[in-house]
Length: 388
Image (cartoon, rainbow, N blue to C red; front, side):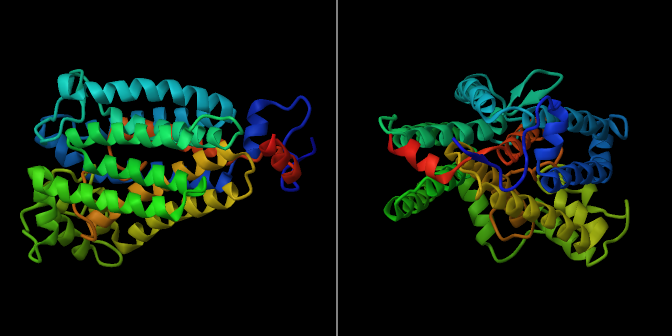
């Protein structure tokens, strides 16, 4: 077989792994990810201090934990990005089985920490949210199944992945965690779309989501309360949405100044779900635009590189992971400016949280792995192997 790499040499005899990784990895996306981690630490210095004081802890307790989580996430990202796609696939399959089992055990052994949704396992010194780790593994497994379905004599991967998705949605809805459930639907739909889903199926998915929303509204007080609050034209200034809206308005273009914001003292989730409100109040619209630009660059740059990828599994998995990051960022930012109902969803790489940060580090590492430059089969060879 003839091998090409878009005009770039991607393999040198005897080259060290680190050197090859640095030459083939997408440095623009890597730089954006590092910048988001740095923004998270910067905002954590402002947003988490009031929480530490309310809990009687040292002033920078949560900032120090954020740094530790960030270092762990960064290490996971680097190690994962150096792996071969086949290795990432195998590890993701094993991790998927473990995290899915953990999600299924939540109704029995999980806790809600008083938030009305059983999403965590508490170990006293730390807590884990298994659905955060489930997402990237789910995308990789879905991509693997759908890619396998295109191989002559292969398994019905699309049907299997659809059944797995329904099982996951059922357990997430039972928590309830409709935000994570929506992310899984979006990621699965994106992978299926790139794999060649018929328009009839895409329409059916949209109808299914709409009907599921209606059923959830009439059967879940948690879900209905958030929808009613979103549809209410008047914003209660004593709610999280009211505090966040006021903070964004007060920040203006340049912000109130470093450590001059007040929303972090009244907003319970200022360090997690509504951290962008802290950024808007203290650093203004400029910081919000900067963060938005970083996510946009990661999304567009990754999708552009994936259009040149001829390995179907890598292309599908990379697309699903890219859409997952973009969708979660869009939902978090949309909730903060009241474009979307409250979802209880973190801002990727920026919000405080060990599960979120480390899981996102693994997700970013997988994405960097699938978008690395590597030898590509000639298109004729690809067509020939598909016809066998």
